Image 1 (tube, helix red, strand yellow):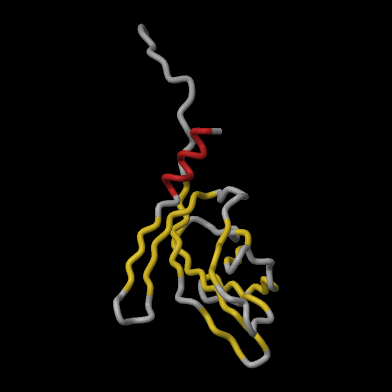
Image 2: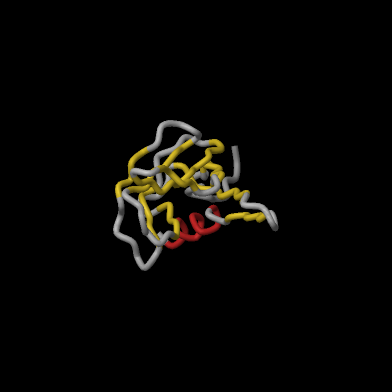
Length: 125
C-alpha cells in the first residue's frame, strides 16, 4: 500500500502558471487511470447566493453537484471517471439569476504501469 500511495503522490504533481493581470489560469495536473476512489476535485467559495454547483467536463453538459457541505469555504466532489488523455474541468456556481464559472483546469489522465513482479536472475538455456 505504501508504494501505491507514493506513486499516486508522484503522479498528482501539478504545474500551475498564472498570467499576471489576467483572469486566466493555466494548469496541467496528472491523474492516474483508474483514478483512486479517494481523489476529489476541490474549490474554494463562500457559498453566498449559490443554489448549486455544476461540473462541466470537456465543454459537455453540466453535471449538477447540488450544494455539498463545505469544510470552511472549501467544497469538494468525487473526481469523475475519465478516459486517458487531456480533459478540461470547470466548476460553476449557479442560482436563479445565472451562472459564474471558474477558469478551466486542464487534467491529463495517464495510465500508470503496474509494478514488475518476480524480478530474478535466470541462467542457462
